Each structure stands twice: as structure tokens, then as C-alpha cells.
Length: 234
Ligand code: SAM
Image 1: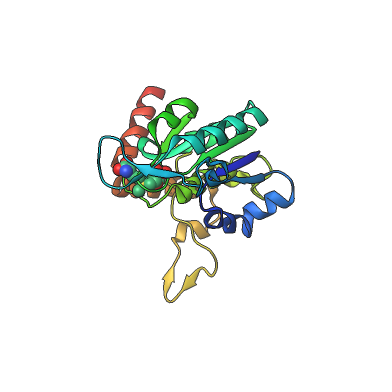
Image 2: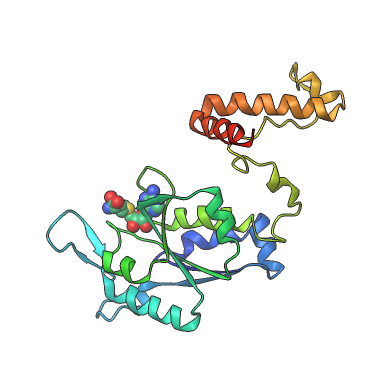
């Protein structure tokens, strides 16, 4: 998988790939990461990439020319590139999107800054637009890293043990059951005794019950989805 980050602030993104799982995936040639800066494509004398909003309104907007030229070039270099814009004005990114996008060969993430990107750029080039939640960030870089990380876990070879994917939260509508590591008792707090008895079917039932409790408490919407799905299966 190749990722291209279209950003005015490469340094904000680059560091994330220096450590841990994604750096190992880069070393194994499973992931390739590139950066393109809209400023390098600006026709203006001072490499300007923003301008005041037409029709008024507070703040500056990323103007179309640098991004049009950059994205035309990018598409010329790889016609299969899948272009994603990060914006709060979009559907929320979900685990299913991460799994689906893991099958692409090249994804470009376009990060906005200021009050956002001229809408004509999005209309012309977006294959998809995503929000990462109902709040406003100062730029799209964190959002693109969140999405890139979630996609990468689903690419074959990126995780040491891909079995962990199948039991994670959102694999089904239920959130994952609580996990514990050794020691069995720490500061007088013991792990649930059933986890210690080695009866795998009873451990599975307990985990399911705990999973349902957690989901009911934190995400009743997901529990409803789980129950609806179960009733269809009957
Ligand atoms: N004026 C915009 C609005 O109200 O929708 C917000 C612009 S925000 C300050 C600047 C950039 O941050 C956006 O262009 C987008 O790339 C990114 N951004 C902010 N919040 C985001 C979110 N929840 N999800 C994805 N990207 C976000």
C-alpha cells in the first residue's frame, strides 16, 4: 500500500511512522509513505495557498489552484490513486471503511487547514470524504493519521498476529470484553476467577456477558444493532 499525504505540514505527520508497528511495515516494504505540499504547486509570487472567502465569512480558505495542480499531477502519476479528503462535513469513518480501504493500492489523504478547502477541489477530486468525529480540529493531519493507522492494521503482514483483528471491538457490534495480563492478583485486585479455570467455553460465555455489559453502558446504539442482528439470525 502506498500512502500519499497532501499537507502543508509534513513534519506533523512524518514522526508517526518512525516507531512501532507502522515503521516495521515500512521496513518490510508493505507500506510506502510519500508527502506532497500544496505550497510547492502554488503559482503565486509568495507561494500562497489560501485566500479570503468569497461572499464573506471569517478566516481564510485554501484556494483551488495549488491543490488542482497537485492532484492532477498525482492522478497522472497513478490513475488508481484513491483520494480522500478529511473534513468535518462528511460521514464518520468506521471500522468497515478501514477494512474496505485496506484493499486499495494507493490512498492519498488531503488535509485542510484554515477554514477548510475550496469546495471545487473536493467536488473535482474526492473519491471519498471522511470526518473522524463531531468536533473541529485545526487541520486534517491528525484525522488522516487516524484513518491511515486504522486501515494499516487490516493490511496483510502489518500486524504480527492478525488473529487479534477477529476479536476486536467493532468486528461485531459488541465492544471487546475486558482484558487482563499477569499477575493474576495485583494490589489485591484479582482477575475474574472464571478466566483462571481453563474452561474455554465458560470463559467465552463470561466474556460475551461482559462484552454486552460494556456495550450497554458505553454504546447502547451498538447493543441494539447486536440484538437486531441476533434476532434476524434466529
Ligand atoms: N470551517 C470548517 C467547518 O466548520 O466545517 C472547519 C475547518 S478546520 C478548522 C480545518 C481542517 O481541519 C479541515 O479542512 C479538515 O481538513 C480538518 N478537520 C477538522 N475537524 C475535522 C474532523 N472532525 N474530521 C476530519 N477532518 C477535520
